[in-house]
Amino acid sequence: MDPAAGMVDKAVAVLANLATIQEGRTAIGQARGIPALVEVVELGSAKAKENAAAALLQLCTNSNRFCNIVLQEDAVPPLVALSQSGTPRAREKAQALLSYFRSQRHGNSGRR
Image (cartoon, rainbow, N blue to C red):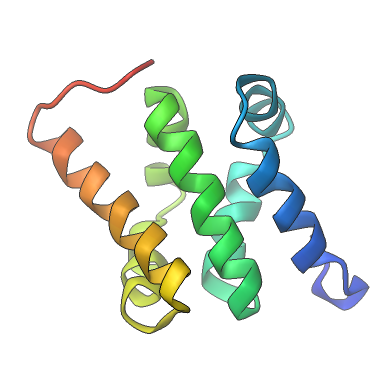
């Protein structure tokens, strides 16, 4: 996603909506959209970060495979930063995702 194109915020909002349904999550995974979402969490506008965190939360809580990809993309540091300095919704989503990672690490099983 090229920030110069000015469409990143809108594209990430669409991805956040798509992530709420199974077909959308599958499409995001097949299109290798997870690395782009992680990049937006780190470098996007406040609104884009918020929507990217919401999308990643949906992806992770519904698929262990997607959750592993998110972790492989080194999403934790930008999520920690977002949980401390993002918009209220972005902080909420980032904190929920970080809590989910912790619960998975401690052996609670999630959906595949």
